[in-house]
Length: 271
Image (cartoon, rainbow, N blue to C red; front, side):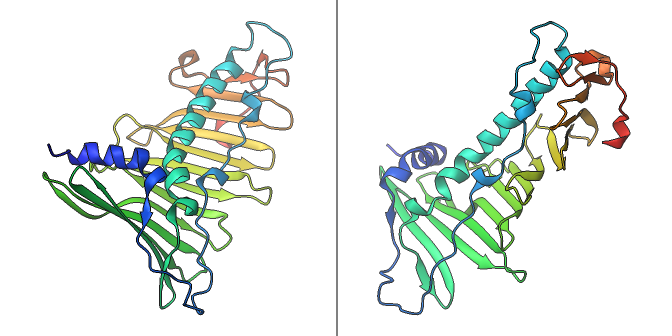
C-alpha cells in the first residue's frame, strides 16, 4: 500500500532527525573549501515578557488588567514557541552531516525512503551583498499520488552579525500558508523588534512587538489590518496598560507598579 504525500511528510519530519543519511561527498580532500557558514538559530529571538511572569505583590482581585495582559502575552509566547519548533529541529547542523562544496557554494543534501516512496531535502546558503546570508531548506517528494520538486519549507535571511533579518516557515502540506517573522536584536541579545505575519492562514492575527529602552509594546491586528489589541508596559517600573476589543469594552485599562488596577495617565497614541 502506498503512503499519501501528507502522511509521508508527517513521518519524515517526525522521525527523520534520528535516521537521516547525508548524501554529501567526502570533503576531506578539498583543502580550499574553508569552513561552511553556521546556520542561524531561531531560539536566539527572545522577547522580554518577564513582567507577566511575576506575581502581584498583593494577592487581590484588583489585578485584572495586568492578568488579562499576561494572558495575551503568554498566547504570543506560545505562538513563538510553536513557530520555533521546526527551525530548531531542521536548521540544526548536527543533523545535516558534512556539506558539499563547489566553487564557494555550500549545500547539504539528504535522501530518505519509506515504504517504496522517497524524499530528499536540500539546504543551501547564498551570500548577500551586505555580508549576510540567505538560507533555504527545500524538499522533493515522490509518491504514488504526486511529485513535489524542490518545495520551500524554511527560509532564513539574516545579516552578517545575525542580529536582524527574517524567517519564513511554509506549510509542508502545500496549503500555501506562510508565517514570516521579522526580527532585530539589541546589544543585550534580546529582541527589540519582532513582527509575525501569517499569510494565507485564516483567523491568525499579525503581531508586532517593540522594545525601546525599558518601554515595551505589543500590537495585534486582524486580517483587515485593524488593531484588535494594544499593550504597553515599562520593564523598570512594572506599570502598563492594555486596550483590547475583547476586554473591558475596548477601554484603555492600566495597572501600577504593584500590578494593581489603576487610573490611566497614558495616551495610547504615544505607543
